[in-house]
Image 1 (tube, helix red, strand yellow):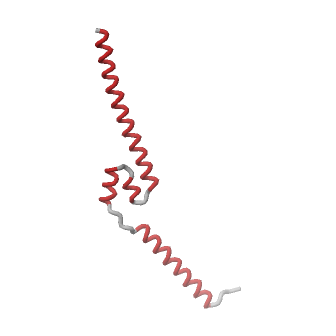
Image 2: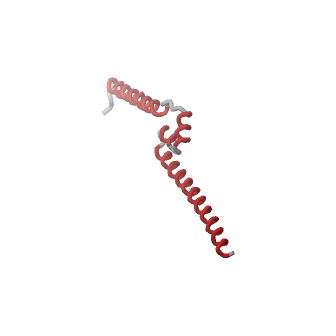
Image 3: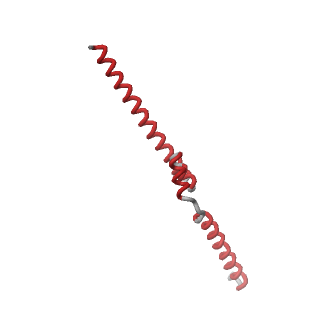
Length: 96
């Protein structure tokens, strides 16, 4: 059963409205002005929070996890290195 001219006009109007709503939703999401300076400062203070501020929650959490793990590894490595220096010194001192 073919559509009448009035029904076709109504369908076209609804489609135009849907397209307008899609455009507005995408525009609101993509054009929201986020400050690059704030994103950088947030990442400087707590790694990953700049990405979270920009809306990339998953990437922000991943960056935070990787950075914290890297810093913890470096700090643990430095502590172990200092320990073995003193341990070797004390063992050498005891043997002489």
